Amino acid sequence: MKINVMQDVLQANDRIAEENRQLFRKNRNLVLNLMSSPGAGKTSLLEKTAEKLAGKLRLGVVVGDLETTRDADRISKFNIPAIQLTTGSACHLDANMVASALPHLQLDKIDILVVENVGNLVCPAEFIVGEDYKIMILSVTEGDEKPLKYPLMFHESALMLINKIDLVQYTNFNLEEARANARKINPDIDIIEISCTKGTGLDEWIAWLEKHHQKKLGELSHA
Image 1 (tube, rainbow, N blue to C red):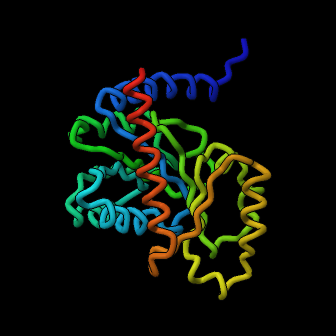
Image 2: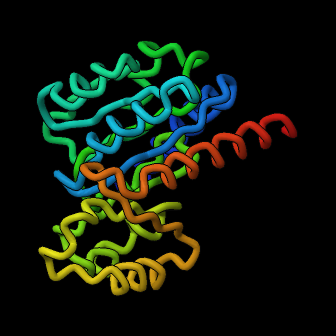
Protein backbone atom coordinates (compact mmCIF):
# COMPACT_ATOMS: atom_id res chain seq x y z
CA MET A 1 0.00 0.00 0.00
CA LYS A 2 1.38 3.39 -1.01
CA ILE A 3 0.93 6.23 1.47
CA ASN A 4 1.50 9.77 0.29
CA VAL A 5 2.53 11.33 3.58
CA MET A 6 2.82 14.88 2.27
CA GLN A 7 -0.65 14.72 0.77
CA ASP A 8 -2.09 13.55 4.08
CA VAL A 9 -0.28 16.33 5.94
CA LEU A 10 -1.57 18.99 3.57
CA GLN A 11 -5.13 17.65 3.69
CA ALA A 12 -5.10 17.75 7.50
CA ASN A 13 -3.67 21.28 7.37
CA ASP A 14 -6.35 22.40 4.91
CA ARG A 15 -9.13 21.19 7.23
CA ILE A 16 -7.80 23.29 10.10
CA ALA A 17 -7.20 26.23 7.77
CA GLU A 18 -10.88 26.13 6.80
CA GLU A 19 -11.84 26.23 10.49
CA ASN A 20 -9.58 29.26 10.90
CA ARG A 21 -11.13 30.86 7.84
CA GLN A 22 -14.64 30.48 9.22
CA LEU A 23 -13.54 32.10 12.48
CA PHE A 24 -12.00 34.99 10.55
CA ARG A 25 -15.17 35.42 8.54
CA LYS A 26 -17.24 35.54 11.72
CA ASN A 27 -15.01 38.29 13.08
CA ARG A 28 -14.73 40.13 9.75
CA ASN A 29 -10.94 39.91 9.67
CA LEU A 30 -8.87 40.46 6.55
CA VAL A 31 -6.05 37.94 6.98
CA LEU A 32 -2.68 38.14 5.24
CA ASN A 33 0.10 35.56 5.15
CA LEU A 34 3.32 37.58 4.92
CA MET A 35 6.30 35.64 3.57
CA SER A 36 9.92 36.33 2.61
CA SER A 37 13.52 35.28 3.09
CA PRO A 38 15.07 36.06 6.48
CA GLY A 39 16.02 39.73 6.68
CA ALA A 40 13.90 40.93 3.75
CA GLY A 41 12.03 43.35 6.01
CA LYS A 42 8.79 41.73 7.23
CA THR A 43 8.95 43.14 10.75
CA SER A 44 10.11 46.56 9.58
CA LEU A 45 7.15 46.65 7.21
CA LEU A 46 4.76 45.77 10.02
CA GLU A 47 6.19 48.52 12.22
CA LYS A 48 5.62 51.09 9.47
CA THR A 49 2.17 49.63 8.77
CA ALA A 50 1.20 49.96 12.42
CA GLU A 51 2.20 53.62 12.36
CA LYS A 52 0.27 54.42 9.19
CA LEU A 53 -2.89 52.48 10.10
CA ALA A 54 -3.17 54.02 13.58
CA GLY A 55 -6.63 55.52 13.93
CA LYS A 56 -7.78 53.94 10.65
CA LEU A 57 -7.74 50.14 10.82
CA ARG A 58 -6.96 47.88 13.77
CA LEU A 59 -3.95 45.65 13.17
CA GLY A 60 -3.04 42.35 14.83
CA VAL A 61 -0.04 40.10 14.19
CA VAL A 62 0.89 36.46 14.65
CA VAL A 63 4.68 36.16 14.40
CA GLY A 64 6.50 32.96 13.46
CA ASP A 65 10.20 32.44 14.24
CA LEU A 66 12.43 29.48 15.03
CA GLU A 67 13.46 31.06 18.33
CA THR A 68 13.20 34.28 20.41
CA THR A 69 10.35 36.79 20.80
CA ARG A 70 12.28 39.71 19.31
CA ASP A 71 9.92 40.41 16.41
CA ALA A 72 6.75 40.28 18.53
CA ASP A 73 8.44 42.54 21.09
CA ARG A 74 9.22 45.07 18.36
CA ILE A 75 5.65 45.07 17.07
CA SER A 76 4.07 45.23 20.55
CA LYS A 77 5.74 48.60 21.11
CA PHE A 78 3.18 50.05 18.71
CA ASN A 79 0.33 49.04 21.04
CA ILE A 80 -1.05 46.38 18.73
CA PRO A 81 -1.72 42.75 19.73
CA ALA A 82 1.16 40.49 18.70
CA ILE A 83 1.45 36.79 19.48
CA GLN A 84 4.82 35.04 19.00
CA LEU A 85 4.95 31.42 17.84
CA THR A 86 8.38 29.78 18.20
CA THR A 87 8.58 26.81 15.88
CA GLY A 88 11.86 25.26 17.02
CA SER A 89 13.07 23.50 13.89
CA ALA A 90 9.91 23.97 11.77
CA CYS A 91 10.57 26.17 8.74
CA HIS A 92 7.01 27.50 8.38
CA LEU A 93 3.77 28.18 10.19
CA ASP A 94 0.89 25.83 9.49
CA ALA A 95 -2.83 26.18 10.14
CA ASN A 96 -2.70 24.35 13.48
CA MET A 97 0.06 26.62 14.80
CA VAL A 98 -1.92 29.70 13.82
CA ALA A 99 -5.05 28.19 15.39
CA SER A 100 -3.18 27.85 18.68
CA ALA A 101 -2.55 31.62 18.71
CA LEU A 102 -6.13 32.72 18.00
CA PRO A 103 -7.58 32.25 21.51
CA HIS A 104 -5.01 34.81 22.70
CA LEU A 105 -6.32 37.47 20.31
CA GLN A 106 -9.55 39.47 20.44
CA LEU A 107 -10.39 38.90 16.82
CA ASP A 108 -13.53 41.02 17.01
CA LYS A 109 -11.27 44.00 17.73
CA ILE A 110 -8.93 43.38 14.77
CA ASP A 111 -9.58 44.54 11.22
CA ILE A 112 -6.42 43.19 9.58
CA LEU A 113 -4.58 40.16 10.96
CA VAL A 114 -1.11 39.56 9.54
CA VAL A 115 0.59 36.20 9.93
CA GLU A 116 4.31 36.98 9.73
CA ASN A 117 5.61 33.63 8.57
CA VAL A 118 9.03 32.10 9.23
CA GLY A 119 11.70 33.48 6.90
CA ASN A 120 11.84 30.88 4.13
CA LEU A 121 11.20 30.87 0.37
CA VAL A 122 9.93 27.28 0.14
CA CYS A 123 7.76 25.76 2.89
CA PRO A 124 5.46 28.68 3.82
CA ALA A 125 3.96 28.72 0.33
CA GLU A 126 2.78 25.12 0.69
CA PHE A 127 0.73 25.56 3.86
CA ILE A 128 -2.40 27.71 3.92
CA VAL A 129 -3.38 29.02 7.34
CA GLY A 130 -6.84 30.42 6.54
CA GLU A 131 -5.59 33.63 4.95
CA ASP A 132 -7.31 35.73 2.32
CA TYR A 133 -4.06 36.58 0.55
CA LYS A 134 -0.42 35.61 0.57
CA ILE A 135 2.03 38.50 0.26
CA MET A 136 5.67 38.13 -0.70
CA ILE A 137 8.50 40.54 0.16
CA LEU A 138 11.54 40.42 -2.11
CA SER A 139 14.41 42.71 -1.15
CA VAL A 140 16.81 44.13 -3.72
CA THR A 141 19.72 42.61 -1.79
CA GLU A 142 18.54 39.10 -2.70
CA GLY A 143 18.49 38.97 -6.49
CA ASP A 144 16.01 39.53 -9.32
CA GLU A 145 16.05 35.84 -10.29
CA LYS A 146 14.30 34.67 -7.13
CA PRO A 147 10.82 34.32 -8.71
CA LEU A 148 12.25 31.81 -11.18
CA LYS A 149 14.20 29.88 -8.53
CA TYR A 150 11.33 29.73 -6.03
CA PRO A 151 8.25 29.81 -8.29
CA LEU A 152 5.61 28.46 -5.88
CA MET A 153 6.09 31.37 -3.48
CA PHE A 154 5.42 33.91 -6.21
CA HIS A 155 2.70 31.86 -7.89
CA GLU A 156 0.70 31.74 -4.67
CA SER A 157 1.11 35.42 -3.77
CA ALA A 158 -1.36 38.16 -4.64
CA LEU A 159 1.20 40.90 -4.05
CA MET A 160 4.97 41.21 -4.30
CA LEU A 161 6.58 44.03 -2.35
CA ILE A 162 10.06 44.88 -3.63
CA ASN A 163 11.71 46.23 -0.48
CA LYS A 164 14.88 48.23 0.20
CA ILE A 165 14.37 50.07 -3.07
CA ASP A 166 16.60 52.84 -1.70
CA LEU A 167 19.56 50.44 -1.95
CA VAL A 168 19.00 49.34 -5.54
CA GLN A 169 21.72 51.64 -6.90
CA TYR A 170 24.26 49.77 -4.77
CA THR A 171 23.30 46.33 -6.10
CA ASN A 172 23.05 44.57 -9.45
CA PHE A 173 19.30 44.03 -8.89
CA ASN A 174 17.35 44.70 -12.08
CA LEU A 175 13.84 45.96 -11.27
CA GLU A 176 12.48 45.27 -14.75
CA GLU A 177 13.85 41.72 -14.64
CA ALA A 178 12.35 41.13 -11.19
CA ARG A 179 8.94 42.33 -12.35
CA ALA A 180 9.11 40.30 -15.55
CA ASN A 181 10.25 37.16 -13.73
CA ALA A 182 7.44 37.45 -11.18
CA ARG A 183 4.85 37.88 -13.91
CA LYS A 184 6.20 34.88 -15.83
CA ILE A 185 5.20 32.86 -12.79
CA ASN A 186 2.06 34.81 -11.88
CA PRO A 187 0.69 37.23 -14.52
CA ASP A 188 -1.87 38.63 -12.06
CA ILE A 189 0.49 39.47 -9.21
CA ASP A 190 0.40 43.06 -7.94
CA ILE A 191 3.83 44.67 -7.48
CA ILE A 192 4.74 47.63 -5.27
CA GLU A 193 8.24 49.03 -4.77
CA ILE A 194 8.87 50.13 -1.19
CA SER A 195 11.51 51.29 1.23
CA CYS A 196 10.72 50.87 4.91
CA THR A 197 13.71 53.11 5.69
CA LYS A 198 12.82 56.01 3.40
CA GLY A 199 9.04 55.52 3.31
CA THR A 200 8.90 55.06 -0.46
CA GLY A 201 5.77 53.25 -1.64
CA LEU A 202 4.25 52.84 1.82
CA ASP A 203 1.19 54.95 1.00
CA GLU A 204 0.54 52.67 -1.98
CA TRP A 205 0.89 49.65 0.32
CA ILE A 206 -1.61 51.13 2.78
CA ALA A 207 -4.00 51.86 -0.08
CA TRP A 208 -3.73 48.20 -1.14
CA LEU A 209 -4.63 47.12 2.40
CA GLU A 210 -7.59 49.48 2.63
CA LYS A 211 -8.89 48.39 -0.77
CA HIS A 212 -8.75 44.71 0.08
CA HIS A 213 -10.21 45.24 3.53
CA GLN A 214 -13.20 46.95 1.95
CA LYS A 215 -13.44 44.15 -0.61
CA LYS A 216 -13.56 41.57 2.19
CA LEU A 217 -16.32 43.46 4.00
CA GLY A 218 -18.26 43.73 0.75
CA GLU A 219 -17.99 39.99 0.16
CA LEU A 220 -19.17 39.26 3.69
CA SER A 221 -22.14 41.59 3.38
CA HIS A 222 -23.31 39.70 0.28
CA ALA A 223 -22.62 36.22 1.66
